[in-house]
Image (cartoon, rainbow, N blue to C red):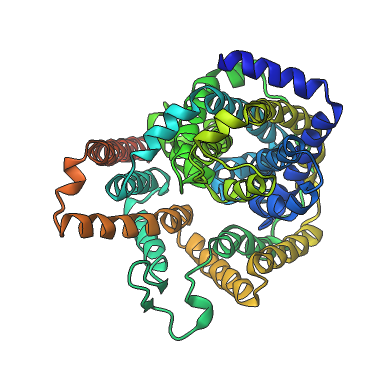
Length: 502
């Protein structure tokens, strides 16, 4: 029955050229917005909602979903080429930028595009056929389950902690401490705000992201501007060879499925999915030592996951009226503006709206693949822009992106200070990526742990007695042990190589 509805939806869209046009415009606009640091898919959807008022519901929603899909993918382009991600899902730059530095920016974007297409398609198909089942599973999550899920996500930080577990643990603690700034989530008492009104709402995520990867990169560019000559190398082939894509297919399908599942859990989204998939890919890789140095798997995994999460995040929004992430919260508002109430009744009363949304999400991935590969050579040329020109542009984009979130100069100053700290952390060989995951998962872990203990009257057994929570905590323990063993094995291999070469 679902398949018949989906086929009829495809026929409806193809018989209406304006629907296809809105998908193309949405995906293109999303890629452009996603490329710009700080201008996220959430902001793109929010800015264009007024333009959908006069459109039929299906066409308006197709436009917004195109921006959603294109925006999540577009962030990888700037991350790969200039180490300044345009979206919170910044895991791709960890391996994309090193490839770009080797003159393989085009290939990195090509792998990113194919992975985004596969992951996004998996997410869209899961959304179309398994939405009610996955949403009902997410409905069973209470505070203990969300806490266990956050702990499981935090264990993934170990896999992206660079060469030192100790340094990684220190950075994670810094990130978790930053999440305690602002109003206490349960009591409402200000914490560590130092009587500064701008800190009462806590540390805003996007300025920190821009500081870590935007301003810090500006400082590195300024430092190396006179030392490292501008390289006018060719970016190489855009389309990777079949022999290069074939080994990545399993990673893409696995990460896309993982991203779809994580995206379907309210509150996680594409940023968490990208880092979790990156950590899992590194943990199971036959060549984990290549991660962070230009690994193709390190691009395929997060890109497939964060685009898979787009379809996953739509599931609770459509079936329960609970947005899976910030973008679907905006889409939830768009649905209500058009007189549609998300939830189980939406499938019963507006089946003519629901399945065109499913079909449109699948078509968005096809359009993304065509535009992404077609424009990859143009995007890749950014790597050859003179640093004297590119660095001031990045600097201005960072200021604009940080300011545009809340129209606050405090956020600009925060991003700048974070950039200075990240610059010196990089000098001291401290990983900076774990801060992002700690900022995302820290509040979830704290709030749900405290809520769980309130429910159980301070009995920690609540986390073990509930099956889903126990499973996630068990997986977290397994992840810790396996990651420790893998790090130990890598250290022993490095030691043997040093002994042989000395």
